[in-house]
Length: 110
Image 1 (tube, one colour):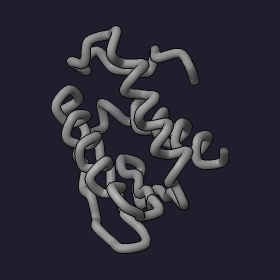
Image 2 (image 1 turned 135 degrees about the horizontal axis):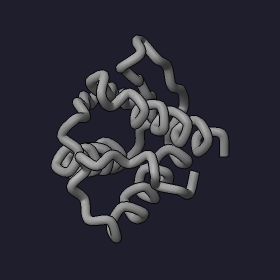
Image 3 (image 1 turned 120 degrees about the horizontal axis):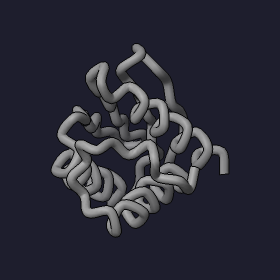
Image 4 (image 1 turned 60 degrees about the vertical axis):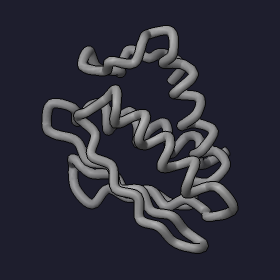
């Protein structure tokens, strides 16, 4: 999944910054992902292991991602041991969500 062809044209993050952002998400998933589920075709639910600074790190990343990819709707669900992240997209961005599912699952298994 090193190829970023799945990133949609509507993403306003400069092309040269995209690999860095993807690496941030990958790192978070590799370190903290405990489970993922698909409550619907346009929704993804991730559970991340909590810990010092994890919620702040997640909120920062979600805020920056929402700033360049406005098609994402993120909801952070705070918790002591687990932090939930709900991600929703519209029908036009279902392929982006599928790519995110694949990336998060692959990183979470490491």
